[in-house]
Image 1 (tube, rainbow, N blue to C red):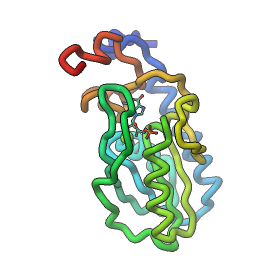
Image 2: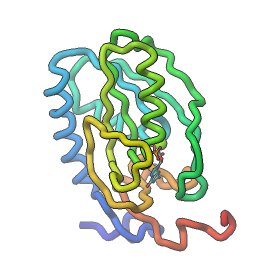
Image 3: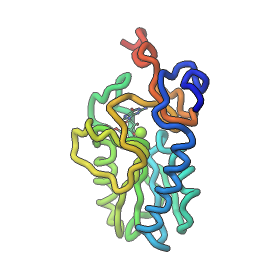
Image 4: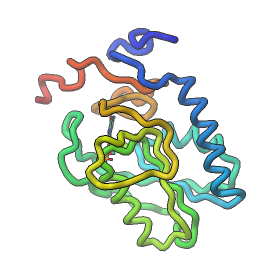
Length: 189
Ligand code: 5GP
Ligand code: MG
């Protein structure tokens, strides 16, 4: 396995390797296929974080798929959650009477996904299910269980494969933890 340092000098550890992500996405695709059969799925991806995960996961699913994206404002200061997420970009696809699969990168306090699920429910979908790449179960503030989960992870701030710190590191091929001195740069404190 490649060392964290050789993937990116700012990484302290690799939590999930690129090949582990690839393997798990194949299984997730099969789980989703099993649930939906041949039904059409309306996928809603929460951008920017879920972009990479959504793109790779959709290529593991051969159902007819419609894709839309939704943006929720960041409510984070450094690596901590500080308030209530706000919806800042709305959907353009019709979701009424459709089977909606909402995709996010990580389920943490549960605030973001609950907000978006609440919004979609008001649009009268045939069904709404949720899929997250990562789940930090121990951090929940709003009770929420996703229907499809890639990996359970411990309470650590992670970056890579779509997840950022101050908009950086989204393009790392793996999920990792930054070196401690880079998680809270002094100029942000
Ligand atoms: P929640 O609303 O569940 O607290 O958080 C969900 C959002 O917070 C995620 O979509 C993601 O943008 C951000 N987030 C939560 N934990 C992490 C983390 O460990 N790393 C990164 N980069 N973002 C996180
Ligand atoms: Mg996000």
